[in-house]
Length: 115
Length: 112
Image 1 (cartoon, rainbow over the protein chains, first blue to last red):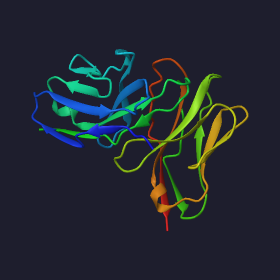
Image 2 (cartoon, helix red, strand yellow):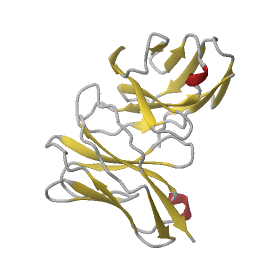
Image 3 (cartoon, rainbow over the protein chains, first blue to last red):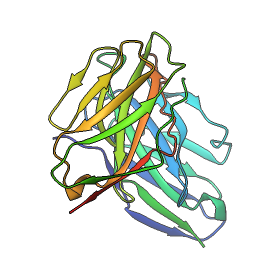
């Protein structure tokens, strides 16, 4: 069964450094999402992406965050200057555009640790 | 999107059916009910979704009341691997948005 894959599984970065998290969505999917989950807390929506542009973003997704689909297969989340509070699990999700109610499918996440 | 209410935790004996309830009394006509689960720190796993009819797939059954104000996810023969946090989410189908709003879910513990 096709799945969303994310790399790396664990990223350790110094505070203030840039980090790029990578995702390969399911191949025929058209809608892409990033979520994060701080340890012990709820899964939170960050951003949705469709047709090569951001369609919705949350308050968490400030100017330090950006997303890109550089080559038609990868979907990346960049954090420009990381802060300690960016430490979390980051999940990528995708869904088909076939019908409007199709579910999102998630990857297993990247654990981001900011030192 | 409508808010959902789920019990914080539930236990189930291995091999028995696990029935996980969810209240969504403010659900509107075009909102679907989705169920996901999260095993330990893995990504949320899609289980099933429905609008108003009951649904069944290889993982579970979803029973939605006639007034759509509540639903029950049924795992017919729970195994130890079904121990997870289960999330009931309602959202409007459609559009390029449709981001999921996760609550705290129900922590299901399947015991031998």
